[in-house]
Length: 490
Image (cartoon, rainbow, N blue to C red):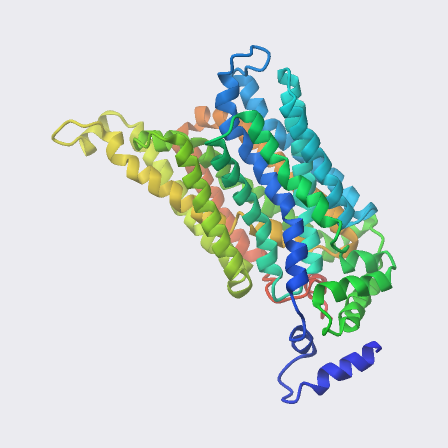
């Protein structure tokens, strides 16, 4: 059956004239295999979550270990945590090259190798440098994963479920973090590394049975393979020739090879600037600072089990990221970013007030000392706990998952690898910069000043969202691309 026959078939069933070709097509789509392919690919972000969370339970052990060759001092512990971001920045650049050269599927399969090798080096570590190398390798894999998986999902999924499935990337990251926190309650650092190598091993195996994305196949001129991939993803009843032709028309119209001169095109530089600023603002919300302070805040609130406190933080992240995933395609990206930003403005401002009152000394005593002469910071513990809970929930609802989702939606197919690599590099470079300079900021601006700076950045990101970020809910990737070019989409 050719495209015209399929189009007539779609319109014949549109007896009321109220349903578009697109809706008629989507009514015939079965999502089972799409969900399977998404599940296989998000084992990558779960592995990435295990990497991010690994240092929290492992570091206390490694700093107090009996073996002097493996024992970490404060500076070495700082590098053990932050070298992942350096590896991930390099991984982002490598991933941008890989997705264009070998495709989305093979890039995803190959990125499981440095995950497994990295954790193997950690398991076999005989000195501190082996620990560093293992962390750098897992960081490299995390950078590739953070680029490839959002692309893979956005190019497979149709517009009705793309937001939900794209949000599963961040959901699996926070599930991985919580999983490693939970495992850390029962396992030592070596066994924890063995457990952490299971998700990437499963990723490699599962991806063997999943297709390449139809858009990449069409960009390579492999039309028959693209049709077969669509048939697998959309089910036997969907007239996939129609969708294939629509994607093909968009590819033909824009050409397929990226050149530096394309950066002068508003259809390229506008989404690129939006993608870069989303990544900058995500890191400037202060998420790393809050997570850095989490244990101290729980201790000041007389919550002695700091390990369990980490699990509670992880649980809040999982719950609100799951809520974001469920409502993403109904509420839309823009409104969730605004709600998320406002929640973080309130919570970081309250954090600043908390630290200001904590450091006020005499004036604080006058304000808050009760008849029993109890220490004032005990009374304020509720403010810190409430601020942290609101911040983490707000971040998980919007600024956690959405920058990665929007990055995967807004770039034209021919610059998708390059533009995504720039965004991932920006994100991880900012993460490294903020992690490394955080203590200097605290010394220069004080704790209160630092959190008020984060609050100001959150205000700016809310304004940026309202003015510059387009709503991509319910639009095909081709329609989003046309929107930036100022043309009508297919």
